[in-house]
Length: 179
Image 1 (cartoon, rainbow, N blue to C red):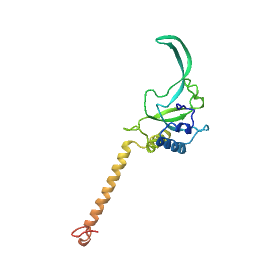
Image 2: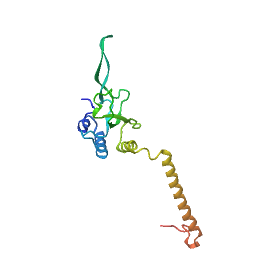
Image 3: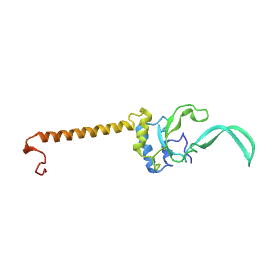
Image 4: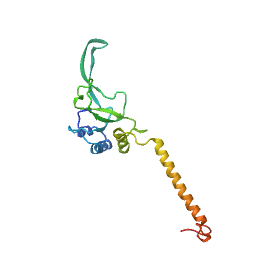
């Protein structure tokens, strides 16, 4: 059975591995569900996801087109990608999606590193950045680490200078072993 946007979390999890089920449960607890029981954020696999789309469909017999008509059909949601997708439940009316009147899931993240398997730490970080914006960039983290290193260096340097200005009997490690 394919995964659809109307599927509650319990039914969705039946199609996913246990570690992804656990992440989905944590995301639902941390970020909530809507009134229909659907989580606001979820992980799904692209191979399982389908959606109903409106469009012009061609009825064919071999290479011959018999007729074209406007209709809806279940189509793969992510035919351009194979892997796990972090999706957010949004309430935007999309005329191509006939079932979007009660909300539908939009993809937010697909890059899960080399192995392609999401973890809860990464999922939480991505969801927080979606909800609250990016607070720190890579250069911010590097600057904080450099400042901590400099502060540690300054404290150590001050301790050495204090010890070297003290009396000769109190010098740290000079001619004796500290235990």
